[in-house]
Amino acid sequence: MSMTVNGIAEELPDDPRVSLLDFLREHLHLTGSKKGCDQGACGACTVLVDGQRVLSCLALAIQFEGSGVTTIEGLGRPGRLHRLQQAFVDHDGFQCGYCTPGQICSAVGMAGEIGRGVPSYVTSDLEAETIELTEDELRERMSGNLCRCGAYNGIVAAVAETYAEHPLAEAAE
Ligand code: FES
Ligand code: FES
Image (cartoon, rainbow, N blue to C red; front, side, top):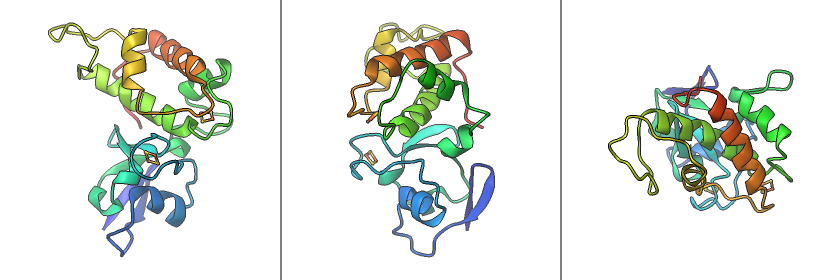
C-alpha cells in the first residue's frame, strides 16, 4: 500500500492509527507541515490531497492509499518558489512562519474550490458562473487557518495579489 508524496511513491505505515500529519513529519521527515493544535482547530497542518485541502492531523495516512499528497515542500523550494510563497515574502505575510505552510497549501486549495464554483458562507450569488474572490470571500475561505502572530493583512494581500493576476482554477501539482 502506498501514496505519492510530492511526486514520490511512499509506502504507507504498517500501523493504521498513524495520522497523515505524523506520517509526513515523523516517517518522511517532511517537517514543513506543522502540528499546532492536533485537533483540527488551527490549520497549521493543512496539506493538499489530490488538489484538495485536508487537515492532516485529523486524517489517517491509510485513508489516502493511492492518492497524491502535496506538502509545502512539493509546492516550491529555495530558488524556485511557488508564486504564493514569493507573494508572502513580498507582502510580509508571516512573522514566525509557523502557520505559513498551512496558509499557503490552504490558499492553493481554496483557489481550486473557487475555480470549481464551490460557494462559501458569504457567496451572495449561488447562480453565478464565476465566483469573484472578494476580500470577504478570501477571509471567509481562509478562516480555518489561524495566525498567532496576526499577520492576516499581509496574508490576505499576498493571496489576493496572486489570484488577481492568475486563473483561480489552479490545482496543486
Ligand atoms: Fe491540524 Fe491544528 S494541527 S488543525
Ligand atoms: Fe506566526 Fe502565523 S506567522 S503564527
